[in-house]
Amino acid sequence: MESIQDEFGFLTDLVTGLAAQFGDNCEVVLHDLTGPYDSSIVAIANGHITGRKVGDPGTNLGLELLRGNHVNGNKFNYLTQTKDGRILRSSSMYMKNKAGTIIGSLCINYDITELMIAEKTLQTLIRPGEQTEVKESFVTSVSDLLDALIQEAQEQVGKPVAVMTKEDKMRMIQLLDAKGAFLIKKGGEKICTYLNISKYTLYSHLEEGQKRREGECGRMMKTLENLETPCLLIDTERMDRNIQAMADVINKHHVKLRPHAKTHKLPSVALQQIEAGAVGITVAKVSEAEVMAAGGVTNIFIAYPLVTASKIERAIRLSEQIELIVGVDSLAGAQQLEQCASRLGQSLQVRLEIDTGFRRTGVLYEQASALAAKIARMPHLRLTGIYTFRGSLLAGKPTLDVAAAGQEEGTLMVQLAERLRAQGIAITDVSVGSTPTAASAAAVEGVTEVRPGTYVFYDRMQARLGLCGIEDCAGSMLVTVVSRPSADLAIIDGGSKTFATDVQPDTNPLQLRGFGHIMNLEDALLVRLSEEHGMVELGPIAQAANIQVGDKLRIIPNHICSTVNLHNQVIMQRGDAYERLPVLARGMLE
Image (cartoon, rainbow, N blue to C red; front, top):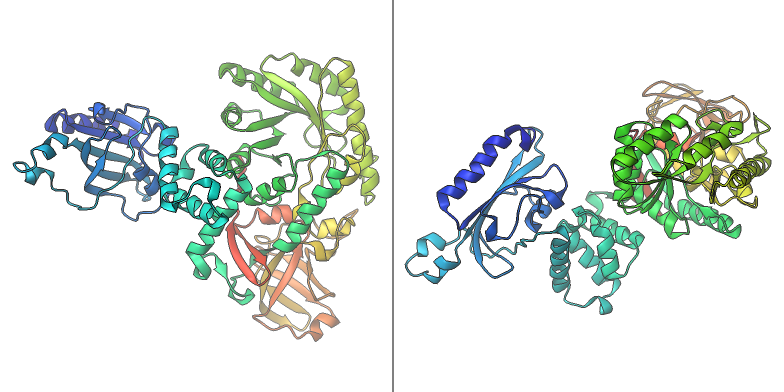
C-alpha cells in the first residue's frame, strides 16, 4: 500500500466494524499522514469520546513519530486522558509504504472511566499493558495542540519566559522540536512570539541543539583530514564578513537589500542575511520559495515568470502564509496569473520584468509601458514594481567596468518607472542589481531595491571583476590528488560533477585561466574536466611543491552558485571546527 487512498474503502469499513464490535465507548480513528497534519483525520467512529471529527488534527504522539523520535511508532494498551478528565485505554498502529515511510495510522481509544469506577469487579479489563501513563492531547485544532505542547515544554523547563536564560530557551526549543511542534504550520512563528525571539535565533538554537545531540560523530568533525572529498567548504568567518559588508554598503544608500538565495540555497544563511538588514530574499523557483518559507523566511520574491497553473496555484497557497511577490514578463503569463488568482479568490503581488539588454527573460524595454498598462487593469494582480537582471553589461556589451554598468542599469530602470507613473501606474519598487552592480546601482536615486546573490560566498569570477580579493572567497572545493601520471600533471577526484562549467576559461571579458583558482599553488591550472576527474597542469613552482598522491588541494571555483547546486551538503568551517549542513534548496528546479 503506497497511500491510505489505495485501501480507503477497506480501512473505513475496519473503522466502522471495530467501533460496532466494541460499542459506543470505543473511538476508532483513521489518519492520513501524507497530507497536512492539521487535517489528518479522514475517518472516525464515536468521535464524541474525544470531541473530534473528520478534518481535525492528530495528537502530539503522531507529531513525535513523524519527527523521528521513535523507531517503532506502534504503541499498545496505554492510558491517556481527555480534556474533560475521562480515562482512555488506547492503541496506535502506524502504516508504512514499501519504502518504509509512514503514511497513516489507526488509533483505538476506549473510554474506561466507568470501568475504573467498577475496578474491583472489572480489573482484568482495565489493566494496561504498560504501567506508565502517557500524556496525549486530544484537540480540535492544531492551534490548541501547539498551545498544549508549549505549556508542557515550559513546565519541563520549570520557569516562566520572563526569567528564562538563553540556555533555558534553547532547552525549551529542543523539547518542542522533539515533540514535533515545528511540523505544525506556522509553529515556529508562534513559538518565536511566545519566547520573544527572532526566527534567526530560533533556527540557530535548533541547529545548536542538533549539534549537541549528534556531536563530533554526527555532523561535527574535528579536522580537515576527516573530510571525505570532493566536498564544498564554506569559511563562515569570511561569509559573515561578506554578509555584513554588503548590508552596510546598501544601507548607506537607504535602499532595500533583497539577496538572491540561488548562491547558498540555505534557509539558515537567508535568515542570517535578514538579521543583518535584508528585507527578504529572492529566489528563482516556487520550490525554492517553499523550502525557504519552511525554514522561517517570511518575505520572498520569485524573480521568474510563472506561466503554468500548477506552479501559480502553489505560489498562491504560499502567499497565504508569507509575503510573496512573483515575476511576470508577458501578457500570456499575466493572464494565467489572473485566471488562477480569480479562481482561488486571491490576489497576487507582481513585478514586471524588463529586458535591459541581457536578452534573457523580460519584456523588451520599449514595450514595457503597454504591457504594464494591461497588467495594471487585471483585478486580481497588484502591479507594484519593475525589476531587471543585466549583469555586467555596459552599452550592450560585457564589461569589467561594473560601476558604470550599475549606474547605467539603475538609470534605465528609474527612467522607465517615471514613465509608468506618468501613465497612472503606481510603481513603488524599482528592483535592480546583481553582485557586480549592486553598490553602484543602489547609488542611483529612484532605485528602491538591489538583489545581489554571489557576494555571500564570492568566487573567482567576482574576484576577476574586482569586487573582492581571493582571500574574501568563502567557498572552496576540497579535493584529493588521486594520480600523478607525470611531473607536470596531477589528477584530482573532482570533475564536472564537482565544479560548475558554465563560466568557461579563456572567454571575454573575464579571460579566466582554468576552471578554478588553486590555492597556494600559483602556477597550477585546472585545465580540463571529465565527469569524475580534474586534470591539473603543474608549472615549475607547483612541481617543486612535490605534490603526492593522497594530498588535498583547495580550489576556488569560477562560479560558486551553480557549483553549490551540484552538492547535497556543504561543510561549514568555523576556525578548526567543521560541520556538515544539507543544501536544502539544492535541485529545487520546479
